[in-house]
Structure formats: C-alpha cells, structure tokens
Image (tube, rainbow, N blue to C red; front, side):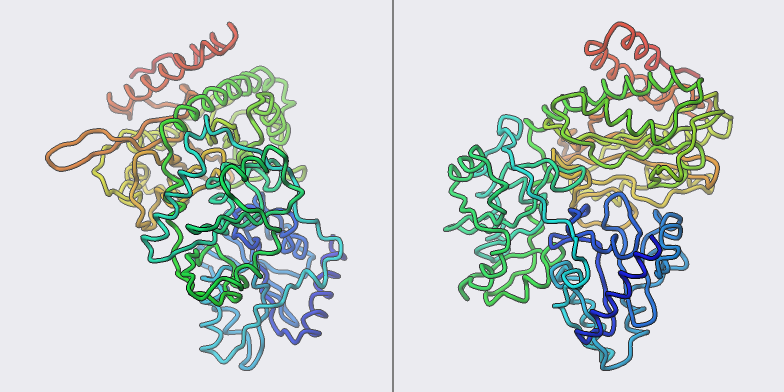
Length: 598
C-alpha cells in the first residue's frame, strides 16, 4: 500500500509539472455530485488510500512538496490510520481545529500560480467560490485538468448495469405526469428547459432503476434534458433492455450516448433558458453552455420529496418485510451471543443475508453500522477485519441499517443491551428516547422548518450538559437514496418547510468515547393533523416497525405520556408483525413488545 500510494503521488506530480499545474485539488465525487459515486470516479480513494463507506468523504490537495486530505469528524480516526505512510496528511473539515480547504489553498499558493481541477467533478457552486477566492489573491484556476486520465491506467470502467422499470403500480404516478409537473416548476423559475444531473432526480423522473451502478442505491448514471418539445436521456446504450426501450418510447424520451451531453449542451439555441442546479451540475458542463443558464433547479428535489398515498402504502409493506428480517436478526443475536463467537463483521454479513432473502430487497440502503460498546460511540463506525471485535461480556450494541426494497427504502437504528445494563446506560438511553418521543409526538403549524423542531429531540440531553452533533433527521427517498433532501431536522437552518408526504428520520443519540453509543431511529412521515382558525397543523406518523429494548428504559424519569407512547408503538409493532412471523418468532415479539410501567 505504502509504495503504491507514494508512486501514485509521484506520478500525479509529474503530470502536474507537465501540464503547468502548481496545485491540484481532487474531489471525492462524480459529475453528478453523488453522495456515493461509482468506482469509476473514486480516484481520490485510489490516490490517497483513504476509503469511506460512501466513497465521497474526502477532498485531496497536492502541491509540489505537500499532500493533504480533508475529511469530517466522522472519519478522523479512520483517515489518520489509512493515510499513514501514503504521503498524505489529514486535515479536519469541522471541529475546533478545522481548516477551510479553500482558505488553505489561497494562503499557501503564491500569486501567479495555477490551481488545477477536473471541472467534470466539481459543482458550479464550489468551483465559482474557489475561482473567486483564487482570483482575489492573484491565483489562476484551470478547470480542465482531468488528473486521473493521466495517472490511473487501470481505472474501473463506467458501470454498465441494465436498467429496469420501477412498476408504476408501486410508484403511483406516470412519467408523463412527473415531467409535466417538472416543466411547471421550470417555468415558475422563468426557464423553458432543464438539464438534470442529479442521479436520484433522474431515476425519479423516469421511473427507471438499476442494481449495481451506485452502491446501496438503485439509481443509474445518466443525464436528463426536458423541455416542452423534447425529452432526452443521456445513458450508455448497453444499459437498455427491450422493456426499458419500450418504456422510454412510450413516454417520448429520446436516448443519446452518455458522453454526448457536453456537445448537446453546447448546441442548445441561445433562446434556451436552461434551468440547472449549481450544486449538482458540473463546472465543465456549465462552461460549454452558449444559451442562458438559470440557476435553481431544486424544484425537482422538492417534488420528489413528497410521497403520494400509493408510495406510503407500499412503504408500509417494506417496513413489514424489514421488521421480519430484523426480528430474525436480533433473535439470532440473543441465541448466539452467549457463545462469544459473534463479531461486528459477522453480524453485518448475517443482517445483509436476512434482508436480501426477501426477493423485493435489491440491496442494503447503506453500509450497516454495527458497533459494540466503544465502537458504538463512533457515529459512522465501519467494522473492518482490522477493527472487528467479538460481541462478548456486558455492553451496548448499536445497529444502524436499512434496505432498498422495491416497495420503499428503510433506515432504522436500535441500541440493545447484552449481558445486562448499568444504571448509567439505562439513564442515558432513556434521555435519548425522551427526545425521540418528543419529536415523534410533535404537532406543528404549516410552514414549520426542521430547525424549529430539532430542539425537541435534544432538550433532555442538554438539561444534563450532554449533546450529540449530528442532525436529528434527514430526508429519505422511495427506492432511491437513503439520504434525500431538501428537508431535514437539524440545528442548522434549512429553509425547506416540512410538508405532508415527506419522509424523515428521527434519530437522536449520545456518544461517550471509548464507552458506548446510543442512537434510536425510526422513519416518520409528515401528515395533516388538523385545520383550525389558526391554519393547518401537521404531525408525524411513525413508519418503522421494530421494538426498542424494553430493558433499557428507566421509567422513573419518564412521564405517563412517554410510557403510553412506547406501549402504543410496541402494540402497533406486534399487531403488524406477528401475523408475518412463525410461532416462535411471534412469541419473541410479544415478549419484546410487552407494556412497560413505572
């Protein structure tokens, strides 16, 4: 590993010298700004040796005599370990010792120097900010430096997995209907066409999916152009099947090669007012335009975020299937835990097998986070052969996982005690659950944003001087991405109000370094609660179906309303899941959902 990474770094510096580049910045994503890029675009991982589960977390900077890799606090420990001996050193994106990447580059690059980037993998928004800062300091930006074309000879090819049609009986809306609504949104932004780069938006608009292009998500690599007169999908032809070709023909969608998108964009008439999302569209594509660009485009994400009644009914089916798999998983843990043979890695493999045993489950929705005791305190812990530990002795096991079912996407976290729990663990678990319950029970007026509700989940921890620093809730897609915008529930201000049909996670937590982690997560959907003289009011309906660990509740610090919420939720879980379980499994479920009391 050491020699290879040092060789890669030396080769990059040779390429920089040949192309008159003084500083090279390498992003961790693809031309679509994907959260999880295909391996074809994971060159930053290959170069640095730092690998995260989603592949995007990490941006590298290389100069003639220095090499750095930025990442956030979820990956500090992992990055330090993986970067050792590679020639790269870690830089912190957040926390008290954070260093802004752009600031570092401008402060450490002399006037007249040239910074090079691959404009295909940098968004318009980031590249414009970078260019402005560089120009203000007398530094030049070259956006046409595709570094991996020069130094990565065995680079994986672009994914060629076949597409399939996501049944409109499950989706509840035709492609014509979606594209009509998209064009209404385009015109509302004073544009007359749009070019969509975000892969999840394209999958939603076309009702097409694939398995394998993007790890943990059934979306595919492509671009989509829509106007009143024309619909064009830019996708590699060998990804099409006769069924997909017929589907595209039915909805008058022309197919062109993926690589034709740049020339197509360049040939658009000057009268075209092209709506593009500056956070999702590549700088290289923007540089080709001769028509009028209109920055915006988040309207597609907003349309996608609101699930219709058909989707929600089918998601309920996905939740039942997930609940059955989780029942078998946690029963297995209880059965085999006393032997001391279970490990974090083994549990991850077993959980994946149990989910994929259902034919409608295409993949996990993300890499399962399975952390025992101290590992549970690492928010995005990834169990590897090097970090793997046995599940033995007393402690807390945190399991954060999900599945990509054709009926919908699931995401659930449960923290369970094995070998008993300490009073401290039960107290902390209950504080987290009190916040979880407070958010789940919220009633709020139309127009409320996630940041206005976030404190509900944190208040009981804050009262004791405790906190967690990740968001309380993220949007969740429907058989698309597990992480979906534009809505969220977090401390940071987000202008998007919560609307009926939006699915969001509810996942407060607490993490004590080297001791244990606690996170309790359900998926909730916003729905209408009532209409009064003061307007419309909304609340949340819980979609996830699996019990919390009854043994971890300290009912002495819970209100009657909180205890009633837990008992009502558990009763619903038992009612929905028991008919789907074997006799032994149903008996286990009834025990796990028995009422708690003071």
